[in-house]
Length: 552
Image (cartoon, rainbow, N blue to C red; front, side, top):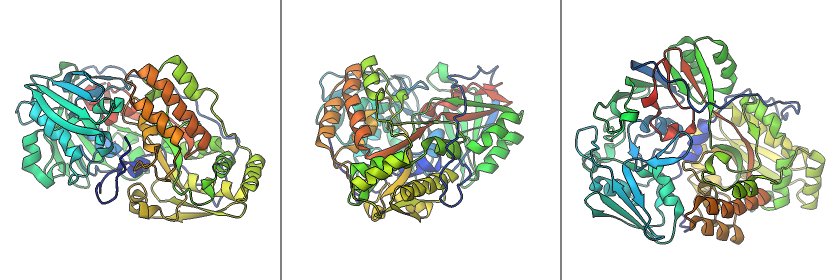
């Protein structure tokens, strides 16, 4: 299934992977010099909330703060927190990704899987776009085919790379035929890869589709209202929305853009805005004690990691990768970077995405993984055994949020402590984004940081990108056994059986460390005293969460 992309044929692909870190969970105090985090750091106790209190009724409007302005509301490029938290309320997918990360019917009222290579979707009747026109199977075909168009350069091309054809095969039926069996395609239909837009609107708006001028015309509980560039986006309730269970309880939602984390915290504390996702970690205590609302924590799928982007240098030796991870005080990093709202992990996935896994699969995936405890002396020995003492590694970072400073400085300190030389290369945020999309930008860079979330309820979304030749396999790591395991798992439809094969891939990644896993943490949200009803979950990227918010 491997089909690597290049910078030229997919110019906008993989944009999200850099933007993800711009929205990472905390702006924390940077460490001075190269001092590693304190070993006494402690994890903060917090509870996960599946659903906040039901609202008492409807509300005229509420405001929501976002750390950044969306790059685009075109679903083909919606690959980031700021884009998707808006788009999820306006556009809908064939399937619906729920707050608990299960999938249920969406614009497809059902689907069938008649052969290993075919997925057949029955399109829901009685659905209208925001301009009042009816949803048809032709709209579905047009929307999905955009991901295959090299002129579009969809960020979701990887989902479609195994697709042979997308055709209308009945009045309300669309059939997707693939080159080989692929369980992951259907699982991705709950995210942006499965969004359906009006074919007429796509043709009419052309290059303006999804921007502040062209807007979007979808089927969600809110319609696109106004986009004031650099300031805000306003959505309006769509009264003819098809699903009575998710009819919007607010007449309007205004998304306000605030890059500065202190400004966001102050706006929430003062009540100038009613709510917001992904709270700056150093502001959580202030928000808890402000008396103007409540802080909640919910399900997340993101793992903070260091991507090994150069296997030609010292990190090409597995012993050096293990030594560096053992020299990192990851508990201290969690305290410094996210104020303790998280925990160390040794896997590149969270249990939350192993939906439908068997007990055996989960046990084999997470129990008994190599833990890489903080041990400077043992790490030094590994460096000596590898003959790497005195060799240099280059860590790229950017002034995006203060956890970048925490992690880059702690990593440099760890490398120096075990006999390596470490250079921190600070680049602009735009240049950092290029690390995820342009191989030439990674030349001379050994490591860079990411907070990598999954958009479907299956860990294979993570491990498929680490196969030989995949676009997002940034270091060019290659393990034929791993590739075979992942490809075999992808061909398995049954989630329980698939989990047991996927567990093999997780264990190989844990043993060989193509990326260095650091930590996981909860999704955070603040609800002011005027509103309630949201489900705290990273599914806000794809689920119409704003529709459930009403008056407290």
